[in-house]
Image (tube, rainbow, N blue to C red):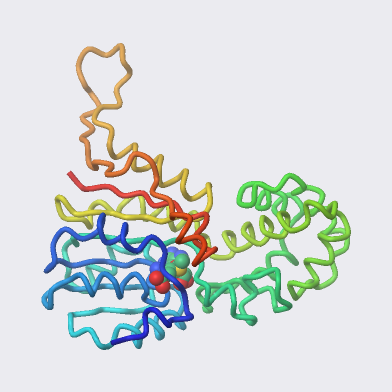
Length: 311
Ligand SMILES: C[S@@+](CC[C@H](N)C(=O)[O-])C[C@H]1O[C@@H](n2cnc3c(N)ncnc32)[C@H](O)[C@@H]1O
């Protein structure tokens, strides 16, 4: 059997809950939109019968290659390829698949990406400021730091990092703008202006903001949420795990919109909006990892799982 337990690529989070909410038909078709090292997909396949199908995509070619190898011993039909989950409709259409029984998104980045010194995802290692999940993207994080205006950088740090020193940091970056290439170059600039006690949190927020901007993470999530339900069978399930409040807020809001029946103002006697309820939310409160899971895998600590069923 593949090396799930031993896998150093990424330890999947909330595995039991993912399986519980996602799988309703053991012979069904499941779409893993963020396959990473294939940790969740491995568990999905383990829980499917031999005629069940898995489709898995990731923006990162290294993840796709790892997942293919990790899942190779399963004889089920598998389609694993490089792709953006926000293009789910096009991906399924190309494969002549009308709709699926379940969709999983496990957002953010994998341990493999964070720990890889060449990728620039961690502020703890000295590496080129890259942060592209998809290496064919034109702009990396260093390009953004070195070419965006002060206002643009401020907006990104504020919106995607919720960083209180956004303006000050952007101002300093632009004033001092020499060519910033590495994580150490950026850390040095931030360290010069941020009080020691806020330093680590600020690094985390600035890195998050840049990562989101480089990979257009919120645009992808919003695009996906606008059309995923067309790709789900009736009674099919959607499960999304997010790791920060920006993503979780978007998921929660969209699920609630889909759950609403009528959005006419209360003073209108007859419904004119004709909106139908599309989803039933399965867990009103997000599922969080247990203390035991966090002890074993500290990177799971901020995970929040939301799930819903298509009406
Ligand atoms: C937290 S990891 C997923 C780990 C995976 N569930 C596992 O068990 O190994 C998130 C993955 O999503 C990928 N990703 C992020 N945004 C994506 C997008 N829009 N489309 C496809 N993959 C994406 C990242 O490259 C990364 O490999």
